[in-house]
Image 1 (cartoon, rainbow, N blue to C red):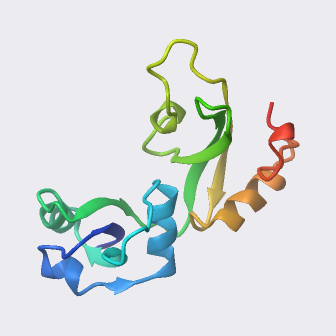
Image 2 (image 1 turned 180 degrees about the vertical axis):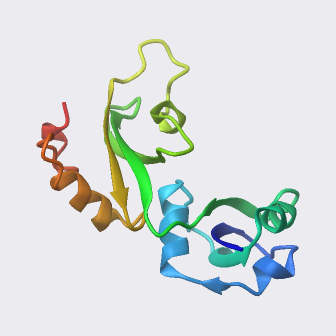
Length: 152
């Protein structure tokens, strides 16, 4: 059995998900995967299950927007970039399962925005404060995620 964070909108089909507990860690994981809580029907829960059980419970459920395996600690990377409208943004990716390019936006346009990759960092959660602290404590970088002037 493993712990998973599952998130979505509306009633889930699976009792495994419907009966699961809401947790701050599940909410943080959903936010880290760009899920936006903008409806009263949005939810994020913590589920104990095997990989087969979580796959069966989520694969064909239109209410499930995503899920990720919960880890005691996780290896993440941080991508610094800009939107097409020159708004600075930073995003995280799971360094064990994704590449930095997976979280970039506007890659299909000519002249896509520049980006910079930081990390990887071993963190305890997807909590924004935890990620900012990891970047702040990086001895090889002098980046402040709250100050885009330090990014490039």
